[in-house]
Amino acid sequence: MAGAGVKAVPALALALLLGGCAFPDPGGYPGPGGEIVVPLHEGPDNVFSFDLWVGPEAFPARVLLDTGSSFTALSPHLSTEADPAGRRIPVTMEGVHEVRETEAYRGRALLSFRPAGGRAFEVREAPFWELRIPHGHDGLAGLAVFPGRLVTLDLAHREVVVRDGALPEPDGAACLPLRVEGGIPSVDVVAAGVPLRASVDSGFFGTLYVDPETAARLPLSDVTGSYVRVRDVHGDRVLEERRLLGAMRVGDQVLESPWVMVGEGEPLLGVGALRRLRVTFDLASRRVRVEPSAPRAREAAGPGGERSP
Image: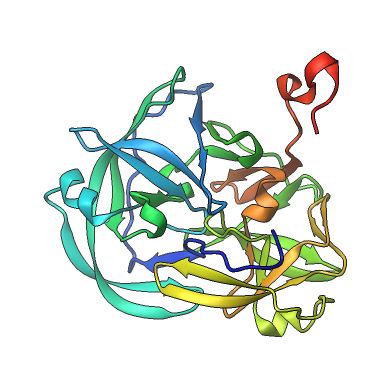
């Protein structure tokens, strides 16, 4: 991430406290051995989205991929079309900067995925909330839209791969324990020798986000007037950005001297890190596999057989 300048980015970690609401596993996925590849679109704001079709009338939608969200949300122009029988209920919205009481429209929708040249599938009776999403997205979705499956995030190749199966026992290297609180996944990170637990948040465009108390424990570069503007569902704010004087480790993967954003809230591991990694989530077993996102054979060689930069 560049040091100077002001950038607008969408949501940091969000959660809705649902008061014990439980939803059944949506249907429509391929059987054992099936694999679904969902193409991703990279936006100018350094976050990713994917296409789906909403409701029996198949309204097209481009949805923000936000693993820092515990729920699926649709913008107001789609929510009542998706489920006219939905209703507004009191909820508590918890973000990294505030907790507030509000009302939200809740419903269930038919979500269809139709990747070009790939396997089409549907998620029936998918629960959603109505929420206005920044940057013109029609909604957002986290890992909750793929319950009970392995979900591999491969931002470098602009795809999400969904399949059945389970990850092996954690080995402290590639396979790690995964904590899931409020539906949001988090992993152990070591930043310049300082252990942290960070939420894995593909809705956060930076690499690492920490609060001022944690920042005081880290070896960071001097403040040089580098700031970023964060735009999410709670509004806009400008935050300080500094360089980590050391390496950040996630399992056996190492990122040298990443940028660190400092503000109120829990630590986040964002797109700046995730685009260098291939991350597979196993929410059922509470495990995650973190691997380098290596170039594929067709991408590794440029003209004349030379490797592309």
